[in-house]
Length: 283
Image (cartoon, rainbow, N blue to C red):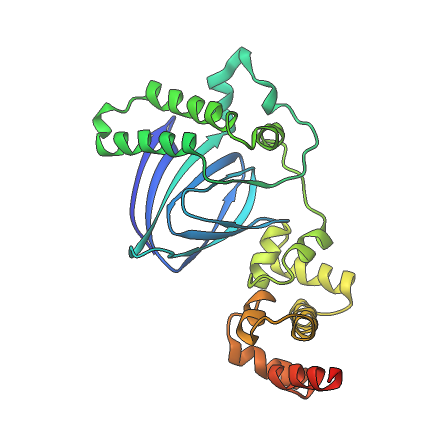
């Protein structure tokens, strides 16, 4: 749950916010006409876009273009809560900021990424520290300062090691592509994302998603995804030394006992028994 939220607004729109969240916490966001920069100060997040699944660690960040996203926050330190900074890049505000000096990175190029992860960079950490100062001293914040901080973020991102990828993503921020239906499904077959969330990522209502899914795969979403997960689990049991619980989470199940039950119903053996049978055949 979100236990504290501080934010600064520009033109009646939230542009910079600081969130304190008690993990684990799962949430969804839809950015219809904005991009968003997220920085994980404390904690860890697994973020799903239409075609990507990214794990964002402490002091890492991600730049998201317009679209739908689901994230799961996980506490990864001795502290009780996760802390996140978000800078919202609204299309109208960016146009106002740059006016006749629109930089090349907002011109479309055909880049396909929805999200670009940025690993830990000192220059970004210093930028976040500057925001901390203003959250501690909000009376110093003005519209002109917020405009400068947004421009500063863009310049900071263009000085990171991800320069070329950031340029490509910025080029496509406000001309979001639609991921192909099969592309969305394949990207999240082994995630623990729900079917209603998959429908959102594909840009469909739940009923339209189920109808299109059965048309593409000749099966219901629940059954097809379950079968694919079990098939991959069976392969991993035979080809790796991963524990049963590790394989359970690797293929997208969240409960080992439920996974073992489904596996036995499918293959008439528990995961452990299946692995032993493969080992005995080799011996």
